Image (tube, rainbow, N blue to C red; front, side):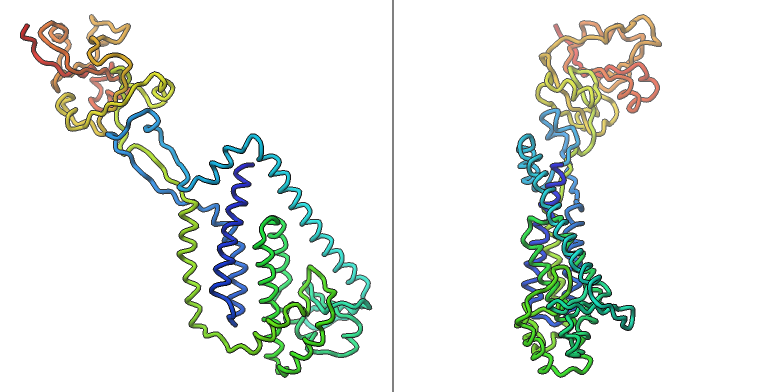
Length: 426
């Protein structure tokens, strides 16, 4: 639930950035098809981009490991502010916020349903006339602004009797370009993002683009521009329109007339759209995650015995500080290279006496572990020499079979004692 709310916040932020970019780059353009495409793609990008997460892998050298948690692979948000806030407020705020969000979505969907019913009611009450290409002209007695929805054109009887072909051509242009689908998509998106003021701004922008395109199509059919502008002016006083439909709008009067008189924008300026690439890159980086893991998995010791990572994590409260032994210094003690080195955690003093694994049968050569002393393989018959007073133990460790066999092979099937000793002169 908290993850879903975070996602909605990211969608809102992404949509705000895309809208601001639109206002800066597309302002006063006559490339209406490109502008419409950008607005529609903005919805898709704002929905999908928060789900895209780049992962940057950061490796920690074993020599920098200081505690058990450093050994456990972790993935964290590169900019975890939203996650931290939500995590801190989860017990108290997530449920009320989620319920408020659901209530807002429900209200917006009810408004959309009400607008749909209004259109359907007018459609049923009006006189239906068949036109070309499957378009139905609905003539109603109500005083409404001409509008279109899907394959229906709603026209007042006054406008129908006046025989205004430009109005029909305008609404037919809306239907031909499937503008109603755009509005339905934006309305559904607005229901999901009802708290985001930029959604309403984007819907206004798409409606504006629809009007520009319809006007352009009408003028392309040979309609006189000045006569058409006067027709638009004559509709200013008519304010009743349908929320759901593309209407012959008077609210965009100034913008529409100014756009008709504007010089055509060169298609070469479309390259400015590439300026969005850095914006998308920043959005991806803001949603990126960083994966931390040790560069090369070392052998792990706990009180000088090999231990698995899971077992070490279970006992991490007992573990002291980590001590790292590099592969170079271990090669002499082990007799062969030890990739990754060793990280040792001790709860006992460093000078604690050497001890065998409990239950080890020293009299059975088949049960005795491999002995490696100063990098030399000690045979079983020299084991007493190993335990004599001639030697001073500087460093030792016992590797269980799981860790010993990959290094020494089958001869370490009972584990391996690794020791670094010096001769005693006392």
